[in-house]
Length: 60
Image 1 (cartoon, rainbow, N blue to C red):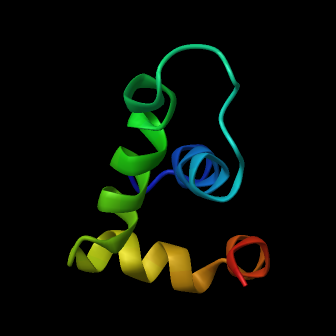
Image 2 (cartoon, rainbow, N blue to C red):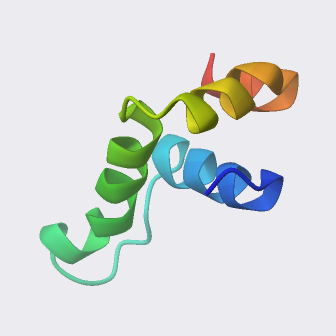
């Protein structure tokens, strides 16, 4: 989960609208899961996220 490409995808899922196909629950499934992972109290994920200025720029 702490690889750069995985964190990039998690942040992408959180900050971008999902496609309009399917019902609401399935449309936002991965975005919700990504948000849960990014906000979990896991030091390795938090450290990698904070160390990446590119990801922080996308989030803020």
